[in-house]
Image (cartoon, rainbow, N blue to C red; front, side, top):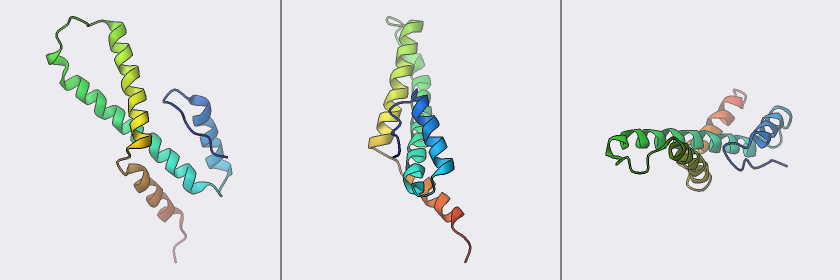
Length: 107
């Protein structure tokens, strides 16, 4: 059974995903898909960080605090993971196809 990674900070399931990838060849497609989703999640997080940085001059300063910045960072991290699972860009599919092509023996 392949575990679902439920969030960015779900280290136990990320570790079990890695151990399954090293030991179970029969679930290779499913594991590659999950790795691709995690990669897309990281891509979305980078995109959100760039958007936040670009909008920094527009902030008013009324609600500005270190705890608010930390909360926003956690929110965008979880949002990126949520979006990657439900609205993929195709990066996960590309990673899966590429890895399967690389692993396929040359004919």
